[in-house]
Amino acid sequence: MERPTERASIPDAARDTRTTPPPNPVPALPVLPPLDPGGRGGPGGPAGAGLGVGSSFGAAPGPAGLWNRNFRYFFVARTVALFGDGMIPVALTAGLLGAGRPASSVGFALAAWMGPLAVFVLFGGVLADRFTPRRMMIIADALRLIGASVLAVTFATGNPPLWAVYVLSSVAGVGAALFQPGVASTVPRVSTDVQRANAVLRVAEALMAMAGPAFAGALVGLASAGAVYAANAATFAVSGACLFLMRLAPAPHEDAVRGTFAAELVGGWREFRARSWLWGVIAVWTVYGFAVLGPMLPLTAVLVTEAHGSGSYGMLMAVNGAGSVVGGLLALRLRPSHPLAAGATALPLVAVSLVVLALGMPVPVLAAGQLLAGGSAAFWLVMWSTTVQTHVPPEALNRLHAYDVAGSLLMVAAGRALAGPVAEAVGAPELLVAAAVINIGVVAVLLVARPIRQLKRIGLV
Image (cartoon, rainbow, N blue to C red; front, side, top):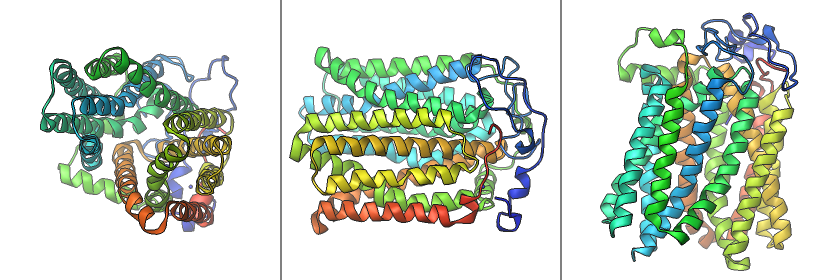
């Protein structure tokens, strides 16, 4: 998830107005709007500072533009890893149920993955600042490679004990916690066009979210859950190799004298509190994650499967992924002057999918709702990611992104856990309508709050 003209209302606005020379010209392949050098931050300013190649932000010397060498390696690393992540639920479900384990073991195994991710991601942000994001992401891939390889062997050779599956799932969660904070700060270091980079990555993420489970399902049918985990391990090996081949010059803040681990964790919190637009969005998003995103997935799965069958549910999830592709492609073209406001205006479309599901509409109408929901959510996420990466100073970006991820994961997980009991108490349609109303309320708050509504974009316009 992812700033105004009246500085009195935004304490950090002054830091977003320094200037720095524009980066090298972008090659003629994609026709892009001109740079706005007057909106870029200077050294020590926001993360939009020095996004040009060979700048103070730390990108390695080389040709400017989106598809430079470093971005190509980063794109392959992220795409392959996301493809592997999509295999995990299928592999766990097939492996555990195929071994005669109860259905609850699948939920516990997934919780064993998400719990460490939510808990350790804050520490991952500090570690990324201390040891560089690239190193931490390579270590994370190595950790996940080991865990997936062991699971591949255990599922292929017999019936692994549940405790081993839970421990290895936790290892994968710790690896994800070490990896995730570095993503936000790496994007502006490997591309001069942060919004286009985020949009391309969002499209790839949506495609991999569809392709990963489909590939895993086919592989389980042809081989076994162990084969899926072997393929999952291979994706982490490819990701780590691509990250190793990236060449990023050291950023100035990487050589700074650092305090204790606890002091840097507290310093990240101070940076977080100093930006009213940042903590404002995340505070609103905790409500959104708990009351809207949390109940949405389990209730959609249950209601659609009961009324139309599991095949229809799978099709609707694919349509949602297709909508995410559309939203990402739209974010490639549109460059609103106030990105958070523009992203917020797309979010009411999520409520459409909730309402049509609550009303028990036929599958074609449900598919239209999922298409709108996927597209609007993807567009918002590109606007949010780009805003954070261009307004937050690079020396604080990893830690602030970690606060964002931790809060989102915890609240969405809580919403999913309570969706079933609440739906049983008040009714699933009623809960979905309430979520739709809260969705509209969240959009209203985002658009009414001046620090969020008036925040201007930095860099390309």
